[in-house]
Image 1 (cartoon, rainbow, N blue to C red):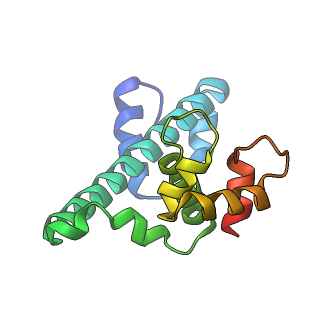
Image 2: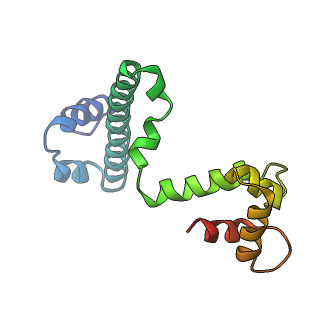
Image 3: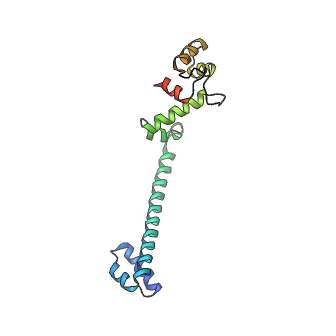
Length: 147
């Protein structure tokens, strides 16, 4: 029975566990019954999703706390290792590390420092992969060099 608010709440809690009598709900009030039932179902879905996320978060924190300290910071790296996301993030990271002055381009000196080679060898590599001949490697040229 959905004729009073108290009965509606009691029935909705009961129907969360069992199959809801949607026909009774529509006959009580066609418009508000449908809206009330839809909103209630959505709220229950959010609550259950929240409980599921809480359980996963608790399990994740327990696993992280049981790891040795040297492995704690690298858990997400291990999860995504070998994927396109991992390779893309690694490329961005290496370009960012190599670009010491953060100007968006890699100079001969920066390339030599990043690859731990002398400037003469770095200049040869830069000339080979510098497609626009500006004397620097941008992100695309740097990534082409890595492939």
